[in-house]
Image 1 (tube, one colour):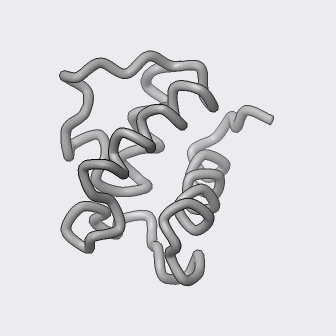
Image 2: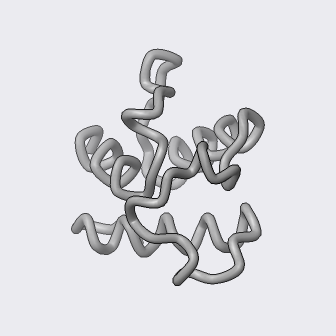
Image 3: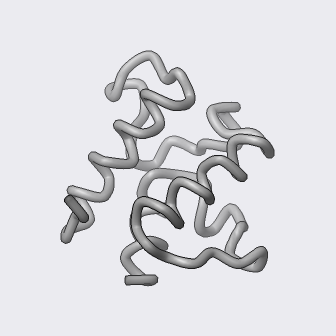
Length: 85
């Protein structure tokens, strides 16, 4: 199911991070948790995340899109995905 609201996007992304990046629990990952600064996401993880987003949400992500303004929190990722659909 493709989410239609920002809360649905946030929930799906949180679940992905918990399963993929070994975040202990959804409660540990708040919508504004900085993914890069906390070490949840590293350079290899960014590449994996981009591949997941392109496949899951049917969007195209260029190199110019891979910036902290788009990728550094669940909130920013949700807004970025919503802007691409």
